[in-house]
Amino acid sequence: MTLSSIVAGSRRSFLKTSAAGAAALTMPAPFIKRAYAQGRNTMVFASGEPVTGNWDPTSHTVLAQINLEGYVFGQLFRTPMGSDDPTQIVWELATGQKILDLYTIEYTLRDGVTFHDGKKFSAEDVKATFEYASQPTRPAAWYPGRCEVEIVDDLTVRVHTKNGNYPAAAFYFLAGFLPIMSAKDIADPATLQARPNGTGPFKFAKQEGNTTILKAFDGYMNGKPLLEEVHFAYIGDATTRVLALMAGEIDVTERLEPEQYESLSSEPKVKLSRTIATENKYLHFRCDKPPFDNPLLRQAASYAIDREQILGVMGVAGHDSSNYISPVKFGYVDLPNYPVYDPAKCQELLEQAGFPGGQGLPEMEYVTSTGFYPKTKEYGEVIAAMLQEAGFPVKFTVMETAAWGARLYQQAGQPSFGDMIDCGWSTGSPEPDLVLRSMFYGKAGPKGGLINGIQDPEIDAALDAEQAEPDPAKRAELIAKATGVIAAKTPSLSLFTSVLLHGYRNGLEGLVFYPNGPIDATKAHFTS
Image (tube, rainbow, N blue to C red; front, side, top):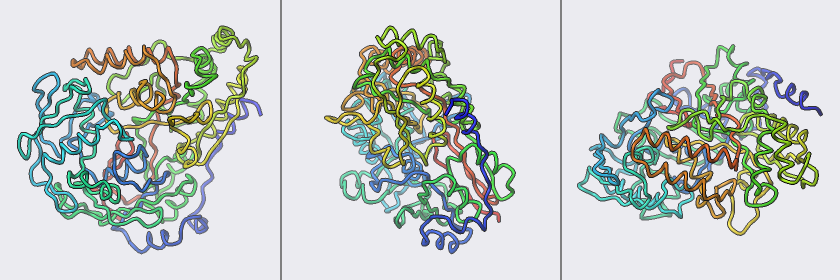
């Protein structure tokens, strides 16, 4: 198969299927019955990824579960990413902040807030959450060091950030991202893991197979939601999710394929949402082992990839970017040294690496997933063909989402799975370090970067320098410098910024779609 035929085939049109034709969907029968029985006061959301079953928010990086937890847990505040100013704040559990010195920030907390189990929210919950979640042993590490929190009174806390060498002037980017847990739950890990308990608009009711059921919280601080229930149902296949939406069996679906989005635009039953995401999609090179422990080969592979063709495959689901962070993140710039398609440069680097024309290179496995991210198989085939044409002997492997996820991260004492692996990374904050330090800092994981395994002192030094700068304008410059260093070492290639494509029922009003994936349904309601 030629490269041109792969690209042409990846742009096939999505074939619509009538609601009657959706009766044979491979979804559990109890889910279908429940969706019909609940009527119009229940919103059914179809997720493309399963939840883990461990409800401790610091125990995982599963996007589906993070999205679901957004309904249950409150945050100190939110940042409306995508605006002209990513430093804006929308207050939630906090009502204000003061920077007291280089490494101390004080938060004033909202009075009269309760957790779903009836416990009153107070400073002890912020202290317990920050200190627990900043432990380096937590899988969803969010802070480069242990936070220390001083309780001034029940509604005032002072966070000391010196242990992480993180200036208070930048700390609030991280603080707004973290779900606030109950101190009582944190003291009992079994309870914390068994069920989510937050201050958000919906409370956890039960888990039935692959469906999580939430109920409106009567005591929510901004008033009880208009919806009585929200059901999160895992439906791994994108086509099945669309057919269920057309059949009226679900109300909202995520991660539409671009052809599906375009086809559904003419459907009167459906509304659409398109949001530039905080998520970039990456091709990670496994830097912890040959052949991609050699930076010349990583760079050569990057110059063999025409990202414009990848965007052609993605259509409305992709947004052009030339950096390792999304354009809605703080500090984004188009990097002047970011790898661009240059076959001659690729061959020059291959020769410098001792593999002229690719001669002598071992077979390299490129691993991707299917069912969750849009068009990974289609654009993966294009990338594999490009690499093969350049002389890289690539084996292309497509895996179901759960199997791929089990092999994604670097594991201590175990060899990496594959030589290249495709993955997106999304966070709920404009803070770039949530991506950069996770992916590219030498101490991020047991073998370096969480997925690529990079350990490079120059990258580490550049990331330490931007992290330690308290002045936002100067820090933005240092972030650009740090991402430029990463581009020069190329442990990964960011292919594009994702665009979140959601479809939902006409007659469902009041949804707010965030750039990191969650949906605010606090004011959502059905008009028909």
